[in-house]
Image (cartoon, rainbow, N blue to C red; front, side, top):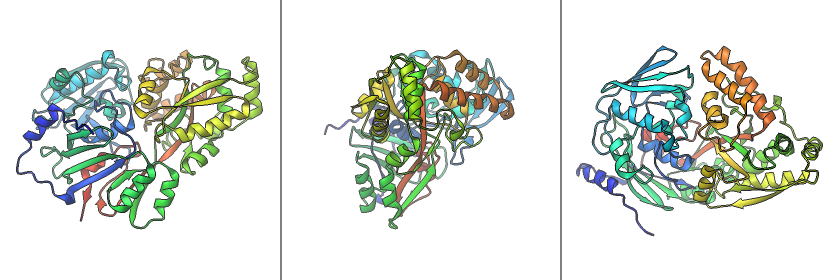
Length: 503
């Protein structure tokens, strides 16, 4: 296989002190079932990319394992009024190329996200920002045109990571290079094989990372990931398939970590294509689906049925059973199709991939369920990179996805379903939904916001631009030698920065 050694990365390695030694007991090998689709934090969408970005870059703030906002590059911040945020930055933080990270880098990075030419999925997180300025080398002020209660949640997204302008301008983007401030640095990338990260000796968190290297190995089969951990070939693996987790839970030679996810499995449509431009058709498909059966068949019951907000976010999420179209009703589904002029059903395709995130298992169950109302589903199974490309280009009738959730409803729903949302791949436009989404982000108190998002959850399930299926469990299996790792619940593996490995 061809070896890719990117020039910027080589320069970084030459800058590492020659006294740095990598001992075998400080190397952690993690198995993943998907290759990263680029490394530019301001651009990437795939979970497989975000897992690498977690370790290479930092944001102003981050989400900890309790889903609380905590300092990252910003040591502190204040909110003197609803339209102003002032962040005090850490001093002495260095990019992997040795240059100090300062306020100008924050201004550049956030404006890069806002630039429509960047096509950043994180743009909506800053949608009401009217000014981002450096007050001095270590102070940044963000001024908003209207209140944005989810701003800190948005700033904790990898899509708003801080990047060095000179490297972006030299390379065009950061998809194949990585020059962040994170706990690890990119050493080598062998596409579809492995990626090696090495310890950042200048990381700002004293004592971290403990590991000298993290090696990602791409192993598409989940059973092989489990076998790798069991044999000692891997130290850790992200496992999604319920059958494998059930097997691992019976194995006392390894550690299994599980946590309810705040991500969502969805089945969405291109709302501009016929017949999905007819709400009756979308409602019919929703009524034909049995979430309980999908979770049982695809997840071995390791998931929770959900509405538009992940059920783990208890403050905001309505009970999915209380929402319209929550239970199967085949008779009503057939009537809706007939009313829409499709009494004999229709045929469409679902773009999917064989990896867990691509949702092939889920698509197969949906295929069988929709056949009961005369709808024929063709599965368009593509390679992972093609799946992402089709997703970005909105080139699909329907797709099964995993959508990254959030503990704040604005951060998730606005970018996903507002007509201007950065990841509104459904091309859904509805003035009533836009109005409520705009209203929700204009309010700051939970008591004022909750009725808005309660109404939105009902409205979205009625309009059905996308069918929200369930929240899966987040699972990690690891060797008993691995300690200190924590799960966040959103797929992040940031806590490898605090993880240790023993003999």
